[in-house]
Length: 310
Ligand code: NCD
Image 1 (tube, rainbow, N blue to C red):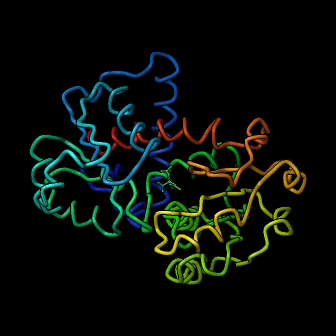
Image 2: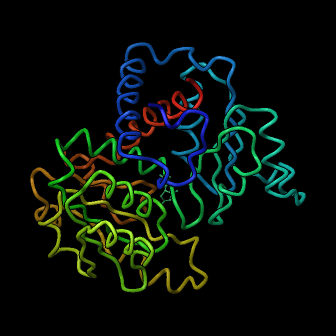
């Protein structure tokens, strides 16, 4: 059953394992049609508004191209400076406005909870494209899809997450999604000041999941099947000297790659700002440029299809 149909996607909490499997099947179809003929016309007559109150390259562009490849139209607002938001229009009103013109809305905002509030006032489905240090459910879905193409089962996987686990929204959604997929264990590597939020840790404990938290990267690398690197989220720091202190706490470079298992993979939601040395981009274990981004397109195409078509 398609639980995505006509529903908003605000948090990964609302997505079941079976929903992810359905989505991934659809993503395979999207991959096939994109590779064979660039797309099709199934969303002809449907319109997406992409309302991004925060910078974005990949998420924004992949929502737009997903709609375009399926024959739909779009209102692309990458930055809201030239909209009525700059005149002081409330989120509630903006939601009412754009839901009149469109069939679906993706929204990114620096404040946690805004996409949820927006959805309450929208008459069309809303997709959270990232809310502050809250969640980024579509990134989690494309990451789980990417992992599922590389490993036959989640049950044997130890997933390492490295960097700013406090402020990085991708790792919040991804951890919850991995729990649903029944992953074996987590290794969280971060400075003490940037640890995974207690709320997420409690969810792991409630599900009887295994995890360790550590500040040391190298010695834990050999135990990781997935090394999920993240950027220290500069925009969430009020004290920039603190950001400077942590920004390059963990760097994956060619020497560190010697400790990475042959069958392990390296992932990163991107952008990177120094935490992965470009010298390792050509390593077959590095998926962030070769696969993750492309999969973001297929997964978002699949999501638009499942939300908009019965
Ligand atoms: C991430 C985000 O916006 O949370 N980027 C993305 O969507 N791929 C990660 C980040 O900005 O660090």
